[in-house]
Image 1 (cartoon, helix red, strand yellow):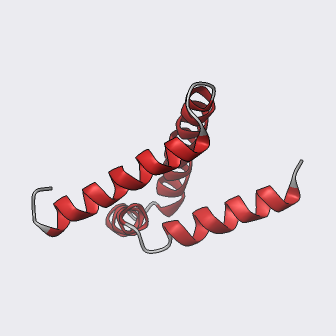
Image 2: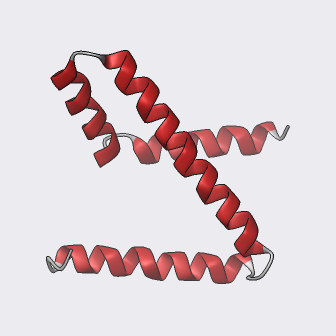
Image 3: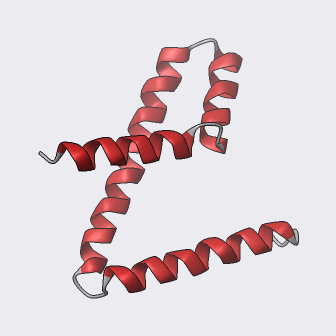
Length: 90
């Protein structure tokens, strides 16, 4: 196992998820239901599944498209969504 990759991936995802809408949804659901462990387990399974789908999709795509092109496409998509959100189109 590549510990450097493991730690950098953990740190990147951990910092990216702090304070995002998923964390806020978990806070709201745990407070509303008073069942924090159920919310934690469900959220953990959901985030793990989404991550698995992303990793498998990236693995599939990388066999056909170079990582540089994938990075450019992702960057354009991310910036486009940001612009659409700024002008209230999303």
